[in-house]
Amino acid sequence: MDRAADALRKEIAMRGYLLFVAAVAGAMVMTVHAQAPAPVTPESLVRAAKRAAGTDYPGTFLRICVAPDNLQAAVGRGAAPPAARTVPDRALWYAKPYKVFDNLYFVGTKIHSSWALTTTDGIVLIDTLFDYAIEPEIVEGLTTLGLDPRSIKYVLISHAHGDHDQGAALLQSRYRAKIVIGAADWDSTLQRPASTPGGVPHRDVVVGPEGTKITLGDTTVDVIATPGHTPGTLSYIFPVRDGGRPVVVAYAGGTAFNFPRRAENFAVYRDSQRKTAKAAAAAGATVVMTNHTEFDRAYDRVRIVQLPRTVGEKHPYETDTATVLRYFEMGADCAEAQRLSMQ
Ligand SMILES: [Zn+2]
Image 1: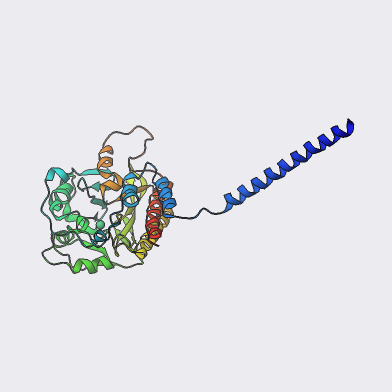
Image 2 (image 1 turned 30 degrees about the vertical axis):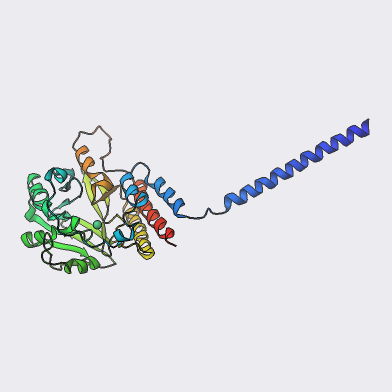
Protein backbone atom coordinates (compact mmCIF):
# COMPACT_ATOMS: atom_id res chain seq x y z
CA MET A 1 0.00 0.00 0.00
CA ASP A 2 2.73 2.37 1.02
CA ARG A 3 4.60 1.71 -2.18
CA ALA A 4 1.50 2.29 -4.31
CA ALA A 5 0.71 5.49 -2.43
CA ASP A 6 4.29 6.61 -2.76
CA ALA A 7 4.26 5.99 -6.53
CA LEU A 8 0.99 7.94 -6.84
CA ARG A 9 2.44 10.85 -4.90
CA LYS A 10 5.51 10.83 -7.12
CA GLU A 11 3.37 10.76 -10.23
CA ILE A 12 1.26 13.66 -9.01
CA ALA A 13 4.41 15.58 -8.16
CA MET A 14 5.88 14.85 -11.59
CA ARG A 15 2.70 15.96 -13.36
CA GLY A 16 2.69 19.12 -11.31
CA TYR A 17 6.31 19.71 -12.23
CA LEU A 18 5.58 19.15 -15.91
CA LEU A 19 2.64 21.52 -15.72
CA PHE A 20 4.87 24.06 -14.03
CA VAL A 21 7.54 23.64 -16.76
CA ALA A 22 4.89 23.97 -19.43
CA ALA A 23 3.52 27.13 -17.81
CA VAL A 24 6.99 28.68 -17.52
CA ALA A 25 7.76 27.81 -21.13
CA GLY A 26 4.44 29.31 -22.22
CA ALA A 27 5.11 32.46 -20.29
CA MET A 28 8.56 32.71 -21.86
CA VAL A 29 7.05 32.35 -25.32
CA MET A 30 4.50 35.03 -24.49
CA THR A 31 7.26 37.27 -23.16
CA VAL A 32 9.25 36.79 -26.34
CA HIS A 33 6.15 37.66 -28.37
CA ALA A 34 5.50 40.74 -26.25
CA GLN A 35 9.07 41.96 -26.69
CA ALA A 36 9.14 41.58 -30.47
CA PRO A 37 8.26 44.98 -31.93
CA ALA A 38 4.88 44.97 -33.63
CA PRO A 39 5.35 45.57 -37.36
CA VAL A 40 4.59 49.13 -38.42
CA THR A 41 1.90 49.08 -41.08
CA PRO A 42 -0.31 51.74 -42.65
CA GLU A 43 -3.14 50.41 -40.46
CA SER A 44 -1.10 50.56 -37.24
CA LEU A 45 -0.07 54.13 -38.10
CA VAL A 46 -3.66 55.19 -38.71
CA ARG A 47 -4.57 53.67 -35.34
CA ALA A 48 -1.69 55.57 -33.72
CA ALA A 49 -2.82 58.76 -35.45
CA LYS A 50 -6.37 58.23 -34.21
CA ARG A 51 -5.06 57.89 -30.65
CA ALA A 52 -2.95 61.02 -31.10
CA ALA A 53 -5.93 62.94 -32.49
CA GLY A 54 -8.13 61.89 -29.59
CA THR A 55 -11.15 64.14 -29.30
CA ASP A 56 -8.99 67.22 -29.88
CA TYR A 57 -8.37 67.03 -33.63
CA PRO A 58 -11.20 65.12 -35.35
CA GLY A 59 -11.34 67.47 -38.35
CA THR A 60 -7.69 67.08 -39.23
CA PHE A 61 -7.69 63.32 -38.61
CA LEU A 62 -10.68 62.93 -40.93
CA ARG A 63 -9.11 65.04 -43.65
CA ILE A 64 -5.65 63.48 -43.80
CA CYS A 65 -6.00 60.00 -42.30
CA VAL A 66 -9.52 58.77 -43.12
CA ALA A 67 -9.94 60.14 -46.63
CA PRO A 68 -6.85 61.99 -47.89
CA ASP A 69 -7.53 64.33 -50.80
CA ASN A 70 -4.86 62.83 -53.04
CA LEU A 71 -5.92 59.17 -52.87
CA GLN A 72 -6.92 59.44 -56.51
CA ALA A 73 -4.07 60.31 -58.81
CA ALA A 74 -6.13 62.86 -60.74
CA VAL A 75 -6.66 64.85 -57.56
CA GLY A 76 -2.99 64.54 -56.68
CA ARG A 77 -2.03 66.65 -59.66
CA GLY A 78 -4.19 69.50 -58.42
CA ALA A 79 -1.57 71.16 -56.27
CA ALA A 80 -1.75 74.35 -58.33
CA PRO A 81 -3.52 77.33 -56.78
CA PRO A 82 -7.28 77.28 -57.26
CA ALA A 83 -8.33 78.88 -60.51
CA ALA A 84 -10.41 82.02 -60.84
CA ARG A 85 -13.74 81.61 -59.16
CA THR A 86 -16.96 83.50 -58.87
CA VAL A 87 -17.81 85.03 -55.52
CA PRO A 88 -19.82 82.54 -53.48
CA ASP A 89 -22.94 83.63 -51.62
CA ARG A 90 -21.72 85.81 -48.72
CA ALA A 91 -23.96 83.92 -46.29
CA LEU A 92 -21.83 80.83 -46.91
CA TRP A 93 -18.54 82.37 -45.83
CA TYR A 94 -18.82 85.74 -44.07
CA ALA A 95 -17.79 85.68 -40.41
CA LYS A 96 -17.63 88.54 -37.94
CA PRO A 97 -14.19 89.61 -36.68
CA TYR A 98 -13.28 88.95 -33.04
CA LYS A 99 -10.57 89.72 -30.53
CA VAL A 100 -9.23 86.31 -29.43
CA PHE A 101 -6.16 87.05 -27.29
CA ASP A 102 -4.93 90.41 -25.92
CA ASN A 103 -2.84 90.84 -29.08
CA LEU A 104 -4.47 88.45 -31.61
CA TYR A 105 -7.59 89.06 -33.68
CA PHE A 106 -9.56 86.75 -35.98
CA VAL A 107 -10.42 88.36 -39.32
CA GLY A 108 -11.15 85.18 -41.28
CA THR A 109 -14.19 83.61 -42.88
CA LYS A 110 -16.25 80.64 -41.76
CA ILE A 111 -13.84 78.43 -43.68
CA HIS A 112 -10.43 80.14 -43.75
CA SER A 113 -8.54 81.95 -41.02
CA SER A 114 -6.71 85.22 -41.14
CA TRP A 115 -5.13 86.53 -37.95
CA ALA A 116 -3.91 89.97 -36.95
CA LEU A 117 -1.07 89.85 -34.42
CA THR A 118 -0.70 93.31 -32.92
CA THR A 119 2.66 94.61 -31.70
CA THR A 120 4.04 97.88 -30.36
CA ASP A 121 4.99 98.81 -33.92
CA GLY A 122 2.04 97.68 -36.04
CA ILE A 123 0.32 94.52 -37.21
CA VAL A 124 1.65 91.19 -38.46
CA LEU A 125 -1.13 89.67 -40.56
CA ILE A 126 -1.10 85.90 -40.95
CA ASP A 127 -2.77 84.61 -44.14
CA THR A 128 -5.07 86.61 -46.37
CA LEU A 129 -8.07 84.57 -47.62
CA PHE A 130 -9.60 84.52 -51.13
CA ASP A 131 -9.74 87.86 -52.96
CA TYR A 132 -13.48 88.35 -52.40
CA ALA A 133 -13.00 88.23 -48.61
CA ILE A 134 -10.12 90.70 -48.30
CA GLU A 135 -12.15 93.92 -48.06
CA PRO A 136 -15.08 92.67 -45.93
CA GLU A 137 -13.06 90.48 -43.58
CA ILE A 138 -9.54 91.94 -43.32
CA VAL A 139 -9.87 95.64 -44.19
CA GLU A 140 -13.34 96.23 -42.70
CA GLY A 141 -12.82 93.61 -39.98
CA LEU A 142 -9.71 95.33 -38.62
CA THR A 143 -11.50 98.68 -38.74
CA THR A 144 -14.48 97.25 -36.85
CA LEU A 145 -12.10 95.97 -34.18
CA GLY A 146 -10.57 99.44 -33.80
CA LEU A 147 -7.37 98.48 -35.64
CA ASP A 148 -5.94 100.37 -38.59
CA PRO A 149 -5.24 98.27 -41.70
CA ARG A 150 -2.63 100.88 -42.65
CA SER A 151 -0.54 99.62 -39.73
CA ILE A 152 -0.11 96.17 -41.30
CA LYS A 153 3.69 95.91 -41.62
CA TYR A 154 4.14 92.24 -42.42
CA VAL A 155 1.91 89.71 -44.16
CA LEU A 156 2.93 86.11 -43.51
CA ILE A 157 1.65 83.69 -46.14
CA SER A 158 1.66 80.12 -44.85
CA HIS A 159 1.57 78.74 -48.38
CA ALA A 160 0.81 79.82 -51.92
CA HIS A 161 -2.72 78.56 -52.44
CA GLY A 162 -5.42 81.05 -53.37
CA ASP A 163 -7.49 80.52 -50.24
CA HIS A 164 -4.64 81.97 -48.14
CA ASP A 165 -2.69 84.34 -50.37
CA GLN A 166 -5.00 86.27 -52.69
CA GLY A 167 -4.91 89.29 -50.37
CA ALA A 168 -1.13 89.61 -50.50
CA ALA A 169 -0.88 91.84 -53.58
CA LEU A 170 -3.51 94.29 -52.33
CA LEU A 171 -1.95 94.60 -48.86
CA GLN A 172 1.46 95.09 -50.46
CA SER A 173 0.38 97.78 -52.91
CA ARG A 174 -2.13 99.63 -50.72
CA TYR A 175 -0.38 99.53 -47.31
CA ARG A 176 3.22 98.75 -48.34
CA ALA A 177 3.17 95.70 -46.12
CA LYS A 178 6.12 93.33 -46.51
CA ILE A 179 5.02 89.96 -47.88
CA VAL A 180 6.75 86.91 -46.40
CA ILE A 181 6.55 83.66 -48.40
CA GLY A 182 8.63 80.48 -48.58
CA ALA A 183 11.17 80.45 -51.44
CA ALA A 184 9.54 77.66 -53.47
CA ASP A 185 6.10 79.23 -53.06
CA TRP A 186 7.40 82.60 -54.26
CA ASP A 187 8.51 80.81 -57.42
CA SER A 188 5.03 79.38 -58.05
CA THR A 189 3.36 82.69 -57.10
CA LEU A 190 5.41 84.70 -59.57
CA GLN A 191 4.49 82.31 -62.39
CA ARG A 192 0.81 83.17 -62.04
CA PRO A 193 -0.86 85.25 -64.73
CA ALA A 194 -1.57 88.88 -63.83
CA SER A 195 -5.28 88.09 -64.16
CA THR A 196 -5.12 85.79 -61.08
CA PRO A 197 -7.80 86.79 -58.54
CA GLY A 198 -6.26 89.29 -56.15
CA GLY A 199 -3.31 89.90 -58.51
CA VAL A 200 0.31 88.86 -58.07
CA PRO A 201 2.54 90.43 -55.38
CA HIS A 202 6.10 91.50 -56.13
CA ARG A 203 8.86 89.32 -54.71
CA ASP A 204 9.53 90.51 -51.18
CA VAL A 205 10.74 88.60 -48.09
CA VAL A 206 11.90 85.13 -49.17
CA VAL A 207 12.19 82.41 -46.53
CA GLY A 208 14.60 79.57 -47.29
CA PRO A 209 14.77 76.09 -45.76
CA GLU A 210 16.58 77.47 -42.70
CA GLY A 211 13.55 79.59 -41.72
CA THR A 212 13.75 83.08 -40.24
CA LYS A 213 12.55 85.30 -37.46
CA ILE A 214 10.26 88.24 -38.13
CA THR A 215 10.45 90.88 -35.42
CA LEU A 216 8.06 93.83 -35.24
CA GLY A 217 8.11 96.05 -32.15
CA ASP A 218 7.94 93.85 -29.05
CA THR A 219 6.98 90.64 -30.90
CA THR A 220 9.00 88.01 -32.74
CA VAL A 221 7.48 85.31 -34.94
CA ASP A 222 9.64 82.23 -35.43
CA VAL A 223 9.10 81.26 -39.08
CA ILE A 224 9.79 77.59 -39.78
CA ALA A 225 10.12 76.10 -43.26
CA THR A 226 7.76 73.11 -43.27
CA PRO A 227 7.53 71.80 -46.84
CA GLY A 228 4.92 69.17 -47.55
CA HIS A 229 1.52 70.64 -48.27
CA THR A 230 3.41 72.87 -50.73
CA PRO A 231 7.19 73.01 -51.25
CA GLY A 232 7.35 76.44 -49.59
CA THR A 233 4.92 75.99 -46.70
CA LEU A 234 5.78 78.01 -43.59
CA SER A 235 4.65 77.35 -40.03
CA TYR A 236 4.99 79.71 -37.09
CA ILE A 237 5.65 79.89 -33.38
CA PHE A 238 4.60 83.17 -31.79
CA PRO A 239 3.66 84.60 -28.41
CA VAL A 240 0.24 85.92 -27.48
CA ARG A 241 -1.17 87.09 -24.16
CA ASP A 242 -4.31 86.02 -22.36
CA GLY A 243 -5.22 88.67 -19.81
CA GLY A 244 -1.53 89.60 -19.66
CA ARG A 245 -0.36 85.99 -19.25
CA PRO A 246 2.04 84.83 -21.98
CA VAL A 247 0.86 81.91 -24.12
CA VAL A 248 2.74 80.37 -27.07
CA VAL A 249 0.97 79.46 -30.32
CA ALA A 250 2.13 76.82 -32.80
CA TYR A 251 0.58 77.65 -36.19
CA ALA A 252 0.47 74.80 -38.72
CA GLY A 253 0.88 76.32 -42.17
CA GLY A 254 -0.29 73.49 -44.43
CA THR A 255 -2.37 70.44 -43.72
CA ALA A 256 -4.28 68.62 -46.46
CA PHE A 257 -2.74 65.93 -48.66
CA ASN A 258 -3.59 67.55 -51.99
CA PHE A 259 -0.02 67.46 -53.29
CA PRO A 260 1.17 64.93 -55.89
CA ARG A 261 0.81 61.46 -54.41
CA ARG A 262 4.44 60.33 -54.28
CA ALA A 263 6.24 58.54 -51.43
CA GLU A 264 8.96 61.21 -51.18
CA ASN A 265 6.35 63.96 -50.76
CA PHE A 266 4.85 62.14 -47.78
CA ALA A 267 8.32 61.73 -46.27
CA VAL A 268 8.94 65.48 -46.59
CA TYR A 269 5.53 66.20 -45.03
CA ARG A 270 6.19 63.74 -42.17
CA ASP A 271 9.58 65.29 -41.40
CA SER A 272 8.10 68.79 -41.36
CA GLN A 273 5.52 67.68 -38.79
CA ARG A 274 8.31 66.40 -36.58
CA LYS A 275 10.27 69.61 -37.09
CA THR A 276 7.30 71.74 -36.05
CA ALA A 277 6.69 69.49 -33.04
CA LYS A 278 10.28 70.00 -31.94
CA ALA A 279 9.97 73.78 -32.21
CA ALA A 280 6.59 73.73 -30.43
CA ALA A 281 8.05 71.65 -27.61
CA ALA A 282 11.09 73.90 -27.25
CA ALA A 283 8.86 76.98 -27.09
CA GLY A 284 6.35 75.38 -24.70
CA ALA A 285 3.43 75.96 -27.08
CA THR A 286 0.02 75.29 -25.56
CA VAL A 287 -2.12 76.42 -28.52
CA VAL A 288 -2.43 74.93 -32.01
CA MET A 289 -3.78 77.17 -34.74
CA THR A 290 -4.19 76.51 -38.43
CA ASN A 291 -5.46 78.35 -41.49
CA HIS A 292 -8.63 76.29 -42.06
CA THR A 293 -11.32 76.54 -39.40
CA GLU A 294 -12.09 72.83 -39.81
CA PHE A 295 -8.67 71.93 -38.39
CA ASP A 296 -8.65 74.01 -35.20
CA ARG A 297 -12.39 74.79 -34.84
CA ALA A 298 -11.54 78.48 -35.15
CA TYR A 299 -15.06 79.56 -36.13
CA ASP A 300 -16.51 78.13 -32.91
CA ARG A 301 -13.61 78.92 -30.63
CA VAL A 302 -13.31 82.62 -31.47
CA ARG A 303 -16.97 82.94 -30.50
CA ILE A 304 -16.62 80.93 -27.29
CA VAL A 305 -13.75 83.25 -26.32
CA GLN A 306 -16.31 86.06 -26.08
CA LEU A 307 -18.13 84.36 -23.18
CA PRO A 308 -17.18 85.21 -19.62
CA ARG A 309 -14.87 82.64 -18.01
CA THR A 310 -14.98 81.37 -14.47
CA VAL A 311 -11.89 81.80 -12.30
CA GLY A 312 -9.18 79.39 -13.43
CA GLU A 313 -11.00 78.42 -16.63
CA LYS A 314 -8.61 78.13 -19.55
CA HIS A 315 -8.79 80.16 -22.73
CA PRO A 316 -10.85 78.12 -25.25
CA TYR A 317 -7.83 77.84 -27.53
CA GLU A 318 -5.39 76.76 -24.84
CA THR A 319 -4.53 73.12 -24.14
CA ASP A 320 -1.10 71.94 -22.96
CA THR A 321 2.14 71.16 -24.74
CA ALA A 322 1.48 67.40 -24.81
CA THR A 323 -1.83 68.02 -26.61
CA VAL A 324 -0.12 70.39 -29.05
CA LEU A 325 2.50 67.76 -29.81
CA ARG A 326 -0.21 65.17 -30.50
CA TYR A 327 -1.40 67.33 -33.39
CA PHE A 328 1.93 67.05 -35.17
CA GLU A 329 2.40 63.39 -34.18
CA MET A 330 -0.95 62.69 -35.82
CA GLY A 331 0.13 64.52 -38.97
CA ALA A 332 3.41 62.62 -39.13
CA ASP A 333 1.65 59.27 -38.59
CA CYS A 334 -0.99 59.97 -41.26
CA ALA A 335 1.72 60.93 -43.78
CA GLU A 336 3.83 57.89 -42.92
CA ALA A 337 0.75 55.65 -43.28
CA GLN A 338 0.26 56.95 -46.82
CA ARG A 339 3.97 56.62 -47.64
CA LEU A 340 4.05 53.00 -46.45
CA SER A 341 0.84 52.13 -48.28
CA MET A 342 2.57 53.04 -51.53
CA GLN A 343 5.45 50.59 -51.10
ZN1 LIG B 1 -3.47 74.77 -49.40
